[in-house]
Image (cartoon, rainbow, N blue to C red):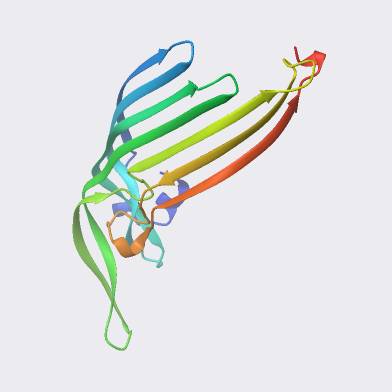
Length: 199
């Protein structure tokens, strides 16, 4: 909790500390031209702090403790040297990120948009906010030594692409309050020259 969680909330709603239990297991391998890593993880949260739409006595949104939430998934990464000058790298993260249950407060209005107060709605098994279930990236790099001092001077260009799946802006799981999946690509061009002092 931060200072605002205490000074902006009445004593009966002041939050408890968060607790996180984390279990991970991984495997790495390497050959002359290939390297990779696999990592599995499980994170269990107790009393995770989150916004639930509820207003405090001065009209500000307050954070509450969510009794139980979790994340689990798999992370993969690897690289392969295709040729002396061409390499391929990539990573992939697959995860399930969920709130087991919590009470959300939703603003209510009548047909003339007059504010009617807040209504409590019970939410179960909803996605954690800002937690995409898929994140993937890959790039292919061309790196060419140039000149007489090939160990010092290189030209490099790379094509990079990334994908991020849907992200929710709150813990309610409402598709209207989410960011659409997106993909983007970058092209990087670079030149590197190392002097004798760099060795």
